[in-house]
Image 1 (cartoon, rainbow, N blue to C red):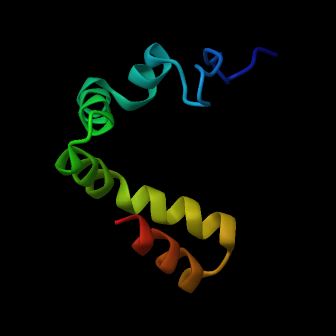
Image 2: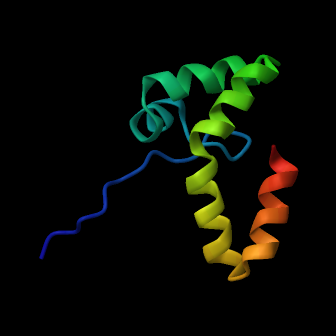
Length: 78
């Protein structure tokens, strides 16, 4: 049986995914926003956060298994 998972490039120095892998996962718009945020533009980071806040909350909630903890942790990111 073939695997349904796809191969991801190894991490670049610093632990972040390599740029090509980021574009595959995030799409061109998000990759552009991420590059802008890395240069210090806080509005780009805020836009990325707002676009992914719901998914981020669900992920943190699944990890913590506690709604209040997830809300606090996500609130500190915004």
